[in-house]
Length: 299
Image (tube, rainbow, N blue to C red):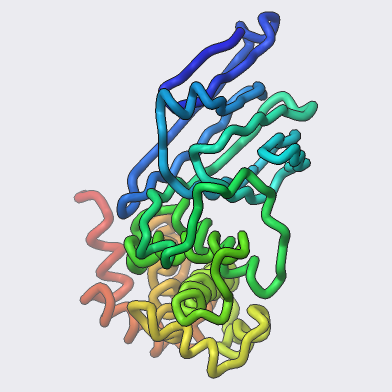
């Protein structure tokens, strides 16, 4: 079976697999960009010259193969093996052919950013054939963290328009169109590092010994650099961590009414009950006991 969809691609699916095909597609706008996520049975997909003429995109595309594998045939006889965790970067209006591997299904995310002269800092994108991104440790962490943040809960984004601009510039840097030394690229890296730091804090917020120095070490940057990274965030490192902990504490208070307040406070990373009560009251305007009482149904 061959079919053309509204997405400007041609799909191919063997006839004997048509009845077992399953798929879901979600899309939402983020500051002019489009975030998409697809889970589906494996199929071959290509974007032909006819598809491009039918539906042009004029966009920079950053894709993440969450699960599944295959081969990506792009321009100039380039063939890339793509597997779970790999990122691809390309211009939307160039042909490609993606052939799935042996997996029965796949999971894919993509960020599509309209080409903008100012955002791309005057550099061309229309010759960027689809290419798998070659990992670079110092660059990959902030790049992936920013990509993941844009694909996650929109409420988490610090500044959506800025974040979209910054991920575009990081993608252009990854493809060699911008220099990592440019001030605009360094600013984009700081944004990515801020989200990477937050990822660590989310995972380890229950640890009382989670210090700025510990997070900086995990990121591979200095303590001074970490504080500079948080200058672009709404809150400092300490206030961000405190906010994460108190939010989790409130969730546990309401979800588990029989759980002692002391156990929740220390389990969420607070080093004293006094600090916990002070932060809770400052955040919610009530005590933990009052919060539980307000959440309970009337007798």
